[in-house]
Image (cartoon, rainbow, N blue to C red; front, side):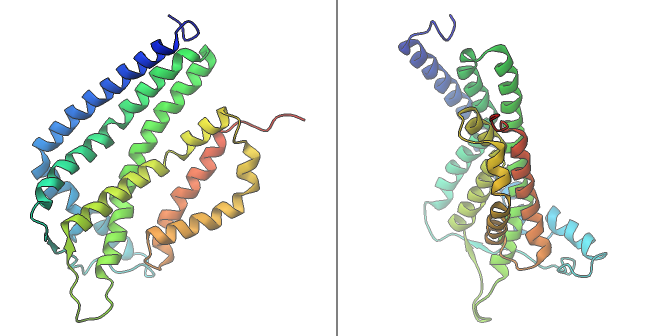
Length: 263
């Protein structure tokens, strides 16, 4: 049955089936995350809290050739984590399994979205939409990886080593660490969806290429501020590590947006 022949209730039933399949996929990943959580927590989630994290080691090697970079080599960085809530560890065990499932299920969610809307598209639009949705899934994972390997470690390192007074010893609660960990990684995954969002808005006639070109200078200023907020370390190198990917996403979005209508 084509999209034109389907009634409202047929569409609603198909949507229900899609949501049910997504729920099943999330349950499967959540159960897997629950089983392997002890290993995931120690070797993945807590990895940025130690001085031998991959990013710190890479910056150490880079700083030997670039004198203007902060010194990451003589490093004793280690986050001291505490728990002050009796139920926090148990509920974090469960909630983290859910967040892992949400991240891993994202490509399948996009697939189900494509599967739901594709009957309403012609063959040309189907090919374009298929490529865009696949690209969106890839970009989401790239954003999550950037959040994990770059944004969260640099933010954690700065905020944990920042001191108002020498008499204050920094210790991080489990809830505080996990909230920032999940927020920054998911936020970067969503930020990297900017080209996909731009394409969707373009298909609705809301965005055109002229919008991005007209407001390019404004966007640069906003992105610099966003990068400074995400990584408030103060040095230009760290700022550029965040700004350049964000600006690259802005320019990439232009490729996915329709050109202005001819006058």
